[in-house]
Image (tube, rainbow, N blue to C red; front, side, top):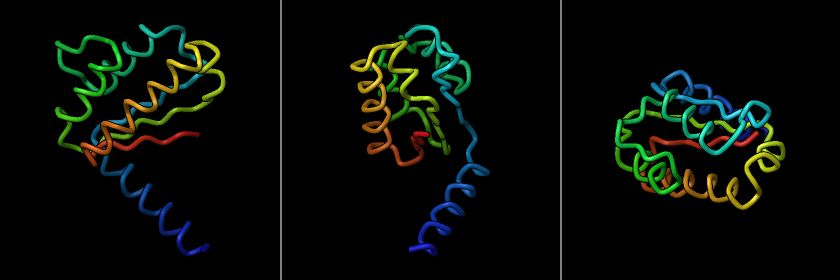
Length: 110
């Protein structure tokens, strides 16, 4: 079991080093849904047509990213209190769905 965890940790570190795009969504710093989408768009260099909503987030992540991209969410409970639990869960689901369609996208929850 320990070797598996070490292997997984090494793989994630390797992926982080290879990732051309990464973003940290810090629940303590996010002010609103719009602020969240602005950070994602800026940090991940989203195209101009990004509509700053969850459907558009899924579309961009699932089709426009051909390089490794890591999206890390910290302080999830604080993020839920600011954005609402339903919206935060929908955000996570949108990223997870995109990562199923595009394995270059990885979601890390902390």
